[in-house]
Amino acid sequence: MTLNQIARRLRLAVPLYLALTAGSALAAPELPKLVTKDGRHALMVDGKPFLMLAGQAHNSSNYPAALPKVWQALKDAKANTLEMPIAWEQIEPQEGKFDFSFLDTLVKEARENDIRLVIVWFGTWKNTGPGYLPEWVKFDNGRFPRMKDKDGKNVYSHSPFGEQTLAADRNAFVKMMERIRQIDVNHRTVILVQVENEVGTYGFARDYGARAQAAFNAPVPSAVTARQKPKKASSGTWTQVYGDYAEQYFHSWAIASYIESIAKAGRAVYDLPMFVNNALREPSLDGKPAEPWKGNFASGGPTYDVLDIYKAAAPHIDFAAPDIYMPESNKVTAILKSFKRADNPLMIPEMGNAAGYARYVYQAFGMGALGVAPFGLDYAEYSNYPLGSRFTDKRMVEPFAKVFGVFAPIGRQWAQWAFEGRTYGVAEGDDRAAQTVDMQGWKATVSFREFQFGERQYLKDKNEYQSGTEQPSGGVAFAQIGANEFVIVGQQARIKLSGIGANDGKPSMLARVEEGRFDASGKWIMERNWNGDQTDYGLNLPATPTVLKVKLGTYKD
Image 1 (cartoon, rainbow, N blue to C red):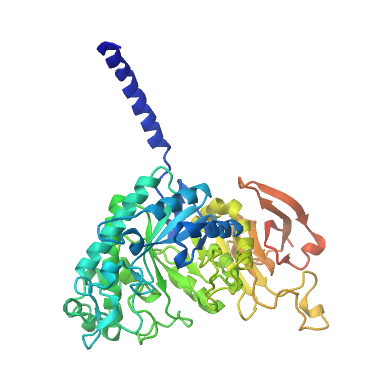
Image 2: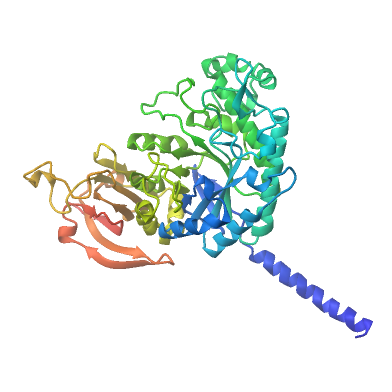
């Protein structure tokens, strides 16, 4: 081949190569992102709203040999997303030497199983402690200082003022994000990243080390006072501005600032949405402001009362999310309401995997949650009862599989409806009392433990209840898809609809009630139309999660 022939082939090959690579770049899905409109939120994945039907693996399931038990449980749960920890000690066992073999395997197998990933970074803090730090960090208190108590003694948790700790954590996190970009940029298997895990400290309000003391005695940053309302003076030291709340607020600012440095650096190399989770303090059930820290929760974490401090100190964190291990229905409702904000998308990254928690999926999705993830949703033979289920096999998964299964075909559509403000939800309370839901022009009254036929007053024995309702398990999620039309998803509940607003006082009745399902493409498949006995006493949803398309109408007297 002559030089001229070679040159001619190169001239033809280069444009072809550029065209092919340009086409590949154009074909790459959009980067996941959070979008907000009118105080509502959506997680956009591949350019469309995405509903996370998720499960979080056990802490020690983050090894290749453990993954088969994870994938099988997720499949049985009808889940579409896995939250998996990646530990600092795992990827940097020796300083400066990185091992991403598990991350590579995880992403590859998730893709093969058609599962999206949320990476949970176990760095400086995991449940407030240093357990997942590399040994070269966790045992070197000189270079990587721990917090100090009031007497100057070391505390179990590392200091948020440890400059070298932060630098090392940040470097490892950035290396991880670079690796995710390298192996996933054309696939977007990884859709979210959690930075640290349940930060804060139990038993200690804050760090009393020298650097911490200097910062505590310095003026509160104006960015904080602009968002977190001062308790005493409008400016000054933390004590002068926040009084009895000063130590908790200061610790929250210090940890949030630490997290911000890590998140900002990570997003600079691969800009995935990021969030923090938290070990909860008791929610407010009476609307009263939270009391100062009294050793009764993890100080410094993103609890509901300091979300504004986190917003001020960590702008590269998209939201803070609650880990719900309080099974009481009134507490769950209060928690969901306190984290659902115009500036804070609602998501539940951890929740107990006991059967009683499954009903809260309806409530959360009705409230517009981006996703829900029962914790320990894999078949490792480990149970965290009483926080979760006693079971470690399919019996643990089944209550969530029933709920996830009905949402799975319409996950994208449901997320879109939620983003448009069309969704509502309730979960059966521990008191078993009826609940009402006000929608556009219509009110739903949802009652529980009902028989499918007749009214309770007809019963000879008023203490007789539908079998299988011994424990609260009912839940309903509504999507208002038109002025008088609804998609209703639920179980173990009776629903009666009546007019409010523009329909208040107007006689109304059900026009059509179709029971059916959505296929894999989201197309509605009707199975039968309810009427007569099936509608005379309300819409009675059985123990098996059921999907209805309901149309109502009004008429003149």
